[in-house]
Amino acid sequence: MFTSLSLIFSFLLSAVSIHAAPVRRAPSSTDILVFQFAGVLELLETDFYTQALAKFKSSDFTDAGFANVDVPIEIFQGILNDESTHSSVIESAIKSLGAEPLTTCTFDFGNALQDVKTMAATARVVENVGVSAYLGGANLLSDKELLIAAATILTVEARHQALLNVLNDATAIPSSFDMALQPDQVLAIAGKFISGCDLGIPPLPSLAVTNNGTIAPGTQLTFSSTGIPANTTGLTCQMLVGGATAAIALPFDACIVPQINGPVYIFISNSTLGQPLLSDITTQFAGSIVAGPLLTFIDSIPQTLGEVATGGSASSSSSTVDDSATASTTTITPAQATALVQSSDALSNSTVASTTTITPAQATALVQDAATLSSSTDTSVSNSTTLADSTGSVPQPTASVAAAAIKVLGMSVD
Image 1 (tube, rainbow, N blue to C red):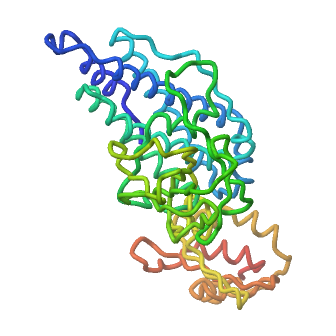
Image 2 (cartoon, helix red, strand yellow):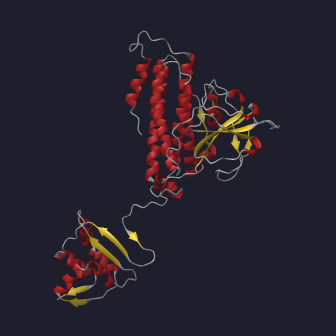
Image 3 (cartoon, one colour):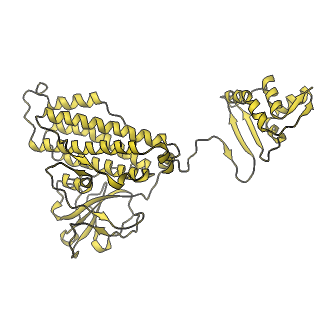
């Protein structure tokens, strides 16, 4: 998950170094613009995770339903480290090309950071859009060395995407293919967070879903956008999913989510006769788009991995509890048995005082029958403990174990 700064830095600089390639032509203005655009997106991601980790504490992740808060915090911190590295390396690469990075942008995430759940959902959008932006940028780069350099970042962004799918209790890899977006389409989604700089790329009108509640197969969507005209006759909503050659084109006023799973880019188009948008951005009739895309997720196929990451129904305990009875059985190691012996003083203080005089033979018999040890206590729940070594065999009771067991039971030996 983590990116080596020195490795990527040396690779990017080798791609732009005059000494490494003395006859290499200068990069085009489009190549530079693509890298400047990528630099802004990396700054956006870096700032997003920096603000999120500064705002939210462990208790906030607990409130969001994470059983082990270290899992999401470590993932977000790792992603932040990657994005920060990407940002600094791209900035250095742009300067090596004889250009200047765009560093005056400011980022306002508003309600996207209102709580951990919203933040995690927004992070998922940010990373999916980042992957699509790099794929779309690949189409615009004419310098193949720069293309390969960008690809080394793209693959890491895709790993982030999968991790965040898991943290949102969704399918880790919902499709065999990702989707590419043109820069103006990327800004239709990410542009609302960016201000204070001129990217040189006019964004498409942003698109929002006005439905309340979870979006799922069967949901009829309604939209708002400055790009949607008052007369919506002839408009279509176009749903683009990974692996499809074209979008699912539906009438604007009957935009019902089909049975799909994973991320979906939704466009509003005025395509003649509802012609679907092609997923291939090199042949896509982008001129028909009047608004969007927006990115939403149809999480219709959750995975066990997501439940484990979020602490849903998974359990790391080796104990098995039968809810229909009061008995429980736990297998412990010899080391744990020793710890029990050492804590016998504390245990005896928590039991009800009761002293019975028995013979040494009776004491040994009690230890050998471990399942009946706790049945002599004054509690209403019976617990039997099996002491097992690594091979699963039960060691013979020692004098110290016998003494501790007797002490816990409140007995004395003649």
